[in-house]
Structure formats: structure tokens, C-alpha cells
Image: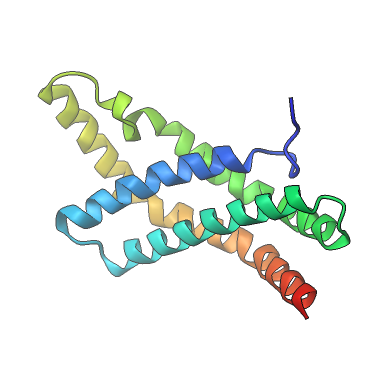
Length: 149
């Protein structure tokens, strides 16, 4: 088994976040997202793309000094990323298709639960995540920019 370069699975975080993005996008499609949800969607989409590219870069250039510095910075982001993933994991069954079960009554009950949790907590959790990863990701961008020069 291959150990993740960052000591945790970025892929698991991305998969859970993509599921949440699907749900948020469905809300946006259904009745239009507020600017707050649009901002959350934009941030989460950007974050998952960035983490995916960072993971690809670190695998491709694993012996590079800049890559080692980037890995250290990603590890600094581990706590907020894992906190957000734990938040998503609590609702995975409700968010996924398997959580809706069979029959319209069960689907409606699950749907109401998803909406309540979504509207009440997502923005707060995304805000905490953003606050926790902004500084390390900014430093990663600087490192990569300096490498290009």
C-alpha cells in the first residue's frame, strides 16, 4: 500500500467535497444560490482543484526541495481539511444517493434533513476551512511562483 505524501488522503477529502459540491449545485439549480453559497461553491471547487494539482506535482517531483517544502505546508492544512472531512462524513449517507432509500416518503424525509443541515452549517464549516487553509495555500502559491522565476 502506498502511503499518501501528506500523511492523509487528499483523494478522500476531494471525493467528499465533490459530493457536497453536487448537492450545493443542485440547490443553486433548483432555486438560485445566494451569493454566500456561490462563494462557498467557488472556494470548494478551487480548493479541490488546487489540492489535486498539488498532489500530482508532489508525486511527479517527489525529490525536489520545493516539493518537500510544499508537503510541509500541506501538512499544516491537515487539521482543517480533516475537520471538514469529518463534518462531511457525518452526513455522507444523507447526501449520497444511497441515503435516500426507497419510496417517496423516505426520500422526502431524507431530503428535508439534508436541507436543514445544509442551510444551517455549510457556510460556517466552509468559513472555518477557508480560514485554516488560506495561509499555507498562499505560501504554496508563493513557492511555486518563485520556482517559475
